[in-house]
Length: 81
Image 1 (tube, rainbow, N blue to C red):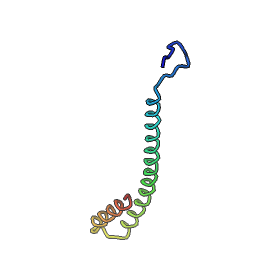
Image 2: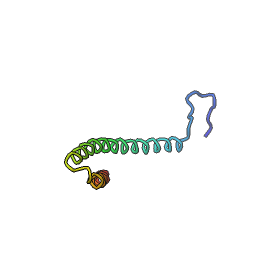
Image 3: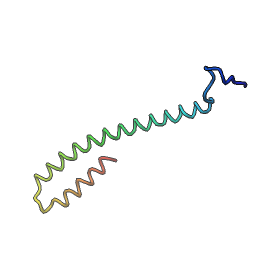
Image 4: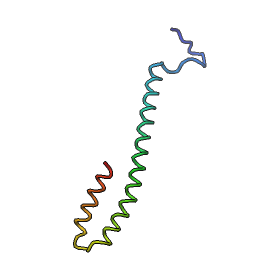
């Protein structure tokens, strides 16, 4: 195949290069969607976690705060999974 280098409409990339770029773009879009969903879950989890911690701290005496914070931390990890 002979390409005229003075032709302004000549191909700038090979077909394989275009396919690679499109495939990479699609992968990045998919990763972006996953990260956006994860961010939404994280934001909603943090808000509910703060409310839960505030309620637990109000209910329990100061001496048992260390065990309650450990339990709430474990609950948070479970929520994330």
